[in-house]
Image (cartoon, rainbow, N blue to C red; front, side, top):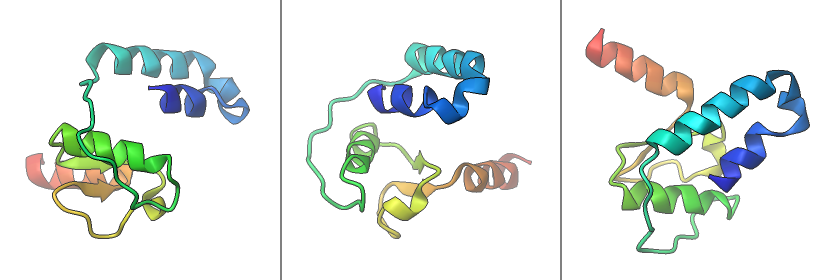
Length: 95
């Protein structure tokens, strides 16, 4: 949550500060909290490894990120996708 807080409160997003606060509140309310069981070192940005560790601990099908390039290209069982990719997949599956 600290990483999301940091990203969503950056100066570039200041015009959207109210929306960022709403998103953070929703995340805090609905997020599944997990404690990663394993430590990974697979991402080009070491801080992104924490997200992958959490996705594995939560048995997540997807890890959605705007920084797909920071993550391993083919990592199973978690599919690493950009937000648009996830939306397209959901549209394909559920119409």
